[in-house]
Length: 301
Length: 301
Image (cartoon, rainbow over all chains, first blue to last red; front, side, top):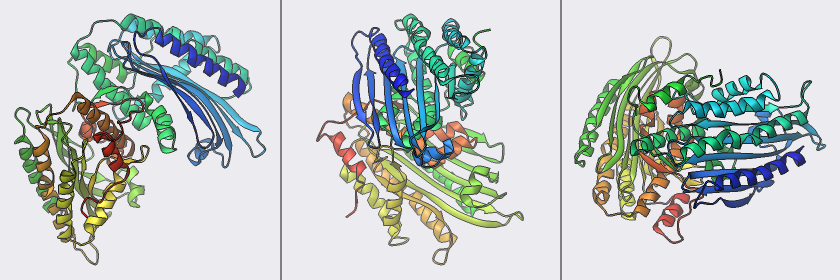
């Protein structure tokens, strides 16, 4: 399976970076190839200070070796070897009318002492973080998520949408990071699904990413905006930083296990503000965003 | 002891805010008084968008009640009542030539079921985070720290300076947050020191804060600077955010135990940048700062 999924994410990285570059007049993705001392490595592609994308990254990695101690408890094994590969992307557009987007698709294998696979699963998802709400855009994003889910199981969308709202939540602010999307993990083979079924689902989701996001970027990238709106975007980006540094399991795991820091923190926005006790004006667009983030909505029905 | 220390920090808050306001042409501290539902509360004083101080806070709080579960393990007790009071301050100057400063002085009491004190201690310190190194300034800051320490114990400075370097360390970056100062905790009464001795030490440290920091602010606040230097300050502020959100025990404790978020996150800088894999030019002032942060120096000898 790893020989099927890794080439898929390699190809996907090319497709995604090419698609984003098509929007850009001046900036281009730069690639850094890195090695992990304990086994494996990655290809980090970052774009910065573009006309459309202020900062973004589309990274792939494939790492293997002895399962780090900190993960042994989580997976309830000791002294196992592992293999993990995946693609992670974050796009922070410059225009505050354009939403930030994040996605990740990954595959994991655990081995016994004989080198046989004893466990294997897929995980990932995609989610949207707008600074100004456009209901039609959010609905489109969720409809694409739902369509690809429905092709695989009638309950997938409801289930994975809920998991996304639960996961990307700043509990210390009592608000969601954004308007969600899909989040799934530990998709194993079972009585209903083969591992190939899981692969088909995850790759279908990944292949629908551009359909979900690009129309939103296209509609918003050249919209006019005020300094006030830019400021709001930077303040909201602060909440994005708070989630990634305080709550995000992947980020914390990387930071605490000697991961490649620059590839992990690539997700942090380029320009960010923190104001003391900032409150938007009543009945403003900014206040409306907060209302929705405090009570995640059903965007389909 | 609490009836001695709390009035001290109340008075100190007035002294410190008055001293900082004396530097400011336009901005003033604004006070928020807040209540903790479980007992106690605080007075948060924040200054923003000043000519000299871009963002700063000088906060006091006194909280009490049942010891939160998350602290029971740390203090090795169950079902205890507690009292804690302290003053916390962070000053983020606007000028990148001026260092950020942080300080905290606190007192803690634990009670048994009969309401008797079973444990009590002081903690705190002060530390400096420059964006451009001025050795004379850093030496002055440390000399003031050493002088006040030496009046209480010949080994205090060496010991608490080292604890400061150890604590304010971004392990994921393998660099210190700043150039240190003093950090101490669990200063209890023992065979050598009475609790009054501990009080005298902590309040002497607190009373030396302005002597340590104000000359640095005075020297740097009006220095000319370039956009490049401002950018470096904002990038380094990103490391400050990383420390506070990923490693700082006080911040994480507050975020995870329903503390007053805005008082806790007051410490975050106002304008911050993250660049992918940013590296200063060789032999630049910026590179020299990094060298010192990677190998904490002895500033006295």
